[in-house]
Image (cartoon, rainbow, N blue to C red; front, side, top):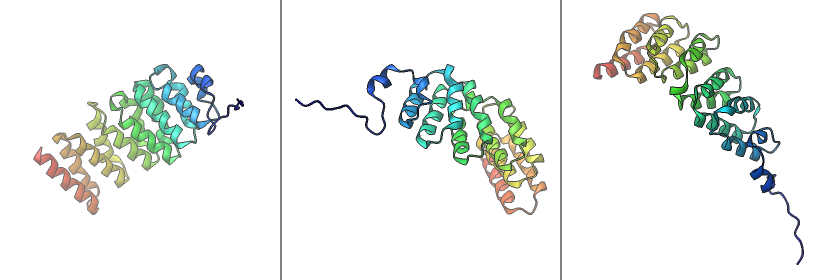
Length: 205
């Protein structure tokens, strides 16, 4: 019988290497398929959060990046959330959006003091992302932080995001805060529409 030489398929590593190696070492492998398998395998290990987040900042393969984010969500610790928060300031739009979605899936792990400074960041887009995230955090200081945005932020779109976040919170105590926005932007039709929507929502509550 002729011997058939074993060959790799689609760049995959030999099974013995994959099964017997250290998943942590695979994170830096040149093969994205192996990096993806590594991220999946490490999704139950809080001790590797630094390695996962470090790889995430360098990863350029979309499927591997998604798996890295999923692994951090699965770990779900405060440390995992803390590692993701700084990436909200990334200039990579795809990474930033992935981080936002991931943090929104783990609100109980996000520490408000980690996010609070971002609501006053120089970048208005980053402030919007931060406001959206704050609105999902189960924290008693959430209303006060969003009220500060409505009272002081110079960008109307940031303020409208704060209104939306307050409406999602569902607390009628937020209505006086939302109504103050009308005085700041009296001629903006979107503000008028949002404040009216909040009135209807909280009146029904």
